[in-house]
Image (cartoon, rainbow, N blue to C red; front, side):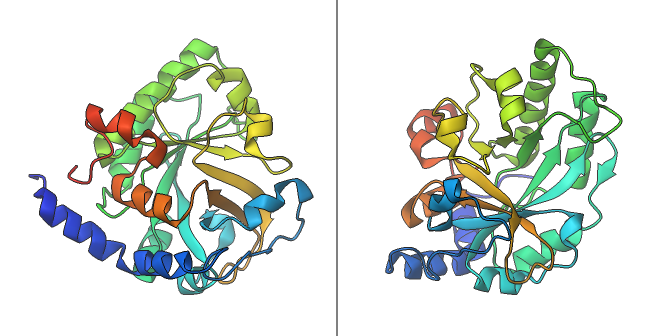
Length: 278
């Protein structure tokens, strides 16, 4: 299918994010966001208190959260949702399509994440993701979830070089499918054993529930921070992971329009990434 003209795609993006951008503009008029700090957490940790007062809040969900009322989620002050789509070479989250359409209808920017497994080929996983995840113009960049598969039959860790090769194959395929630079989600174990010292242009989404990310990840810049897995958000019946975006309302709008961390646009833009007219 031929690519849409830049002006047309820009208009479609603005239409798709119209409600969100309006909320952002209103929130910019009040310190702490439209709804103020949101404390919802069944087991809050004092070391991540700063996250609760940051303006751009969001959640990530999977089948475990059940049927979600995304209109209430948006009214509760959530600016984004990442949702599990696929895992390995043959699993799709049974709530993915429902969550995908309901979040869109509610006007919440949403992105899909793929959980990488290490006992199947990256090419197989890439083909599965491309076959199952819609390439919607208004979606957030896709996410590659990188962790060790400790709770599956694929528990053995693999050589670093092999893992990095799989990661790079998957990232390239996800970018080719969506036209957006994927985000890397990871935890401390995987980061320290595999990603530390490696260069990736991708935005990082870091898990850190008992300290701020810079204390656990070599002071590495992060774009998203998962700060609790025991969050409470109106519209979600069960506990849910809560996250924040690093920046303010202006940075968030920039991210929505370019798909890249605003701090990296000047570097990545000239390479053909981070442009609205993709």
